[in-house]
Image (cartoon, rainbow over all chains, first blue to last red; front, side, top):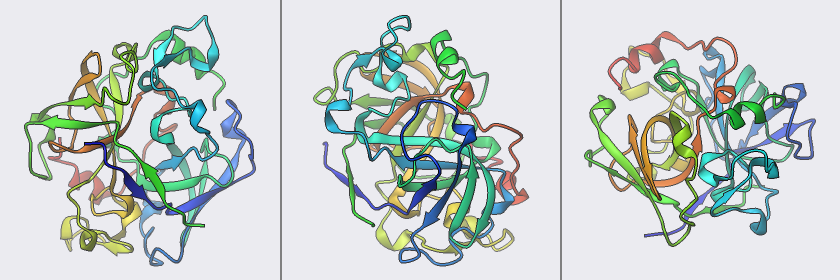
Length: 155
Length: 155
């Protein structure tokens, strides 16, 4: 059943941050340049009516040996529980996919300026979706203590 | 710059809904079966400490001609504005990626029971991430009227 799925980057992240660092992503200015060879000029028409976008991207700098198929301590912190790779958002994950809701600053044609995107310069972008209120988690979002602690300085 | 990225499904959706229908997804019971050939038994360890998971999946039933590279009326409704494919969450999109926050009902090994996953039976799953409070959109989520109207009966 595990046949391969081939995706084509829709564009790339341009960012002042060129190296993966765990924290302080809100200090980063970045934008997404969609590939004009792939899309019509109106592919982002009306996007600016939304306050946030969901960016699906590819952790292109992660090497095969870094990918975890089982469990690990988040950030190698043994004071945090060992949890499965699908119970954390670490980049060393199967398929190397990142998903982040970023604040939309502006759209100009196929160029999208965002705030708070945790992706480095050159990151391939696979999809952009508008954040809709109905697509937020329905009901209270509960998380374990380690997750709250890990995210303390992330943004 | 547009080199292809190859992904392998981590598992598949098992659902009572076998055909793509736009609305009433909350009436659907479903679970995700991760591929035991790819992952260790503890790949989901600790996931049950979260109330919701983010599921990244592939709209495998969408044919090439259905994919929009520019703008269209959401659901073909001419009373709604014509917006770019990246300003809507329609399945006929480049790379066919879906991202949904579903309520986590339970985890048993590599089998994950969810509520409110808008994916049909047999859908390839590409990633699962825990919903963390800090990864929700920061600040008020603003959306246009058409989006609120479109989502009225979705769940």
